[in-house]
Length: 143
Image (cartoon, rainbow, N blue to C red; front, side):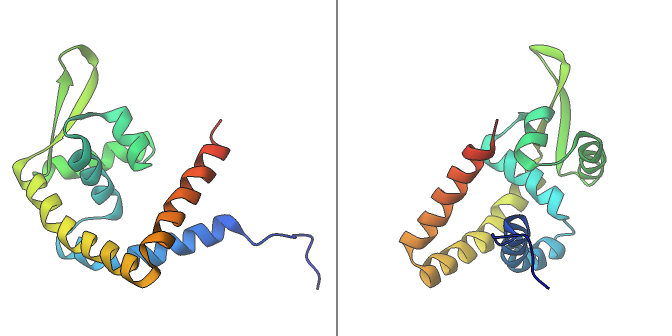
């Protein structure tokens, strides 16, 4: 059977690449009872500090309704706090608790070790090319 497609399935390849990378990270997340989504939220907070929920949703790529449930579980587990933005009471600000920040620090060690392994395996230049090409693709497809 012939196919009308001239190009490989890029979305599938990107998902496969994501799963390959995450297969190294997930065991560490599970050891700390974290889902992929919870980790993405903690990573955003670890990089930016206190963040408005809309930015968390955008940066962590979690849709609003799902984010509500994720944040509720994280708050229940003592990983985050939620408060009203003092400048705009309509907005909610999320911040990692000391426990959440400690978890980010703990997990960042094994995650950074994995990135170092990828860099050693692929070479610094290739890994940099991957980042650059992905950035270009994202910019190209972003309206």
